[in-house]
Image 1 (tube, rainbow, N blue to C red):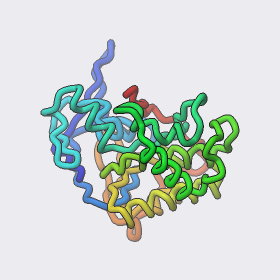
Image 2 (image 1 turned 180 degrees about the vertical axis):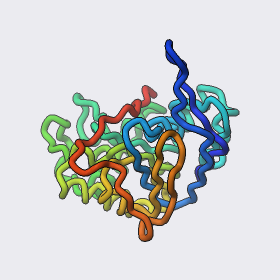
Image 3 (image 1 turned 135 degrees about the vertical axis):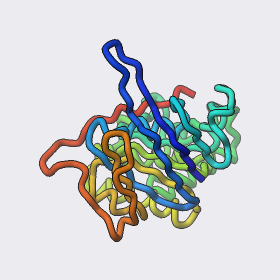
Image 4 (image 1 turned 120 degrees about the vertical axis):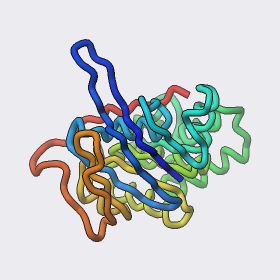
Amino acid sequence: MIELQRVSKNYDHLEQPVTALREIDLQVGRGEFVAIMGPSGSGKSTLLNLLSALDKPTSGRIVLAGADIGAMTDDAVTTFRREKIGLIFQFFNLLPTMTAVENVLLPVLLARRATEADRQKAVRLLEQVGLGHRLTHKPSAMSGGEMQRVAVARAFMTEPPILLADEPTGNLDSNSGTEVLRLLRRQAEEHGTTVVMVTHDANAARVGSRLIVIRDGRIQSDAPVATSAPSAQPAGQPPEQSSYAAPTA
């Protein structure tokens, strides 16, 4: 479902170039739930931007759901991202003037006019994440955990084969975070969705089936969670802020 071949990403700065990723090779299969950890500046956010087709590698090849992203036009990549990739953000990224149902419908509204069948599907998704009583509420009337569950339902709306989550529990209490992780794991196990989650939380990472640790732009370790659960965030250090960019279309 996801394949990276010798992928590197360099950024040009005034003083000297910065290499964020160094010849990454990575394969993730259908239905895998992969957690990615690493210290600040390790390349986690850069990797997620590349996997979401929001950025392009300096070198190497990225294949997502059978599509060679480097061979596609910008318009084709935008359409591919909207239809094939679900995105969940640390800060929810809900539109404040829209209700829960309207926010879930957003991926459809960006592509075309929503139908009654689309609306019914959005309602079902909200019911599945426990928000059937919040259909007409706007984000300002919801808790952080509720807003994140709306974001999860929105990511499920187009039934994407790939779901990318950037610190999805970073702003939630432990109970809300556990519920969001349960939803992501169920999506992988029951629907075969490939889930890739960047997190600073070792406990959250253990919910996945596989843990990848990145340091200095390279994959330091890659192993099943049951046999490897290193903590990439030193004890007592506050969570780092994400630099992951939200799509505009």
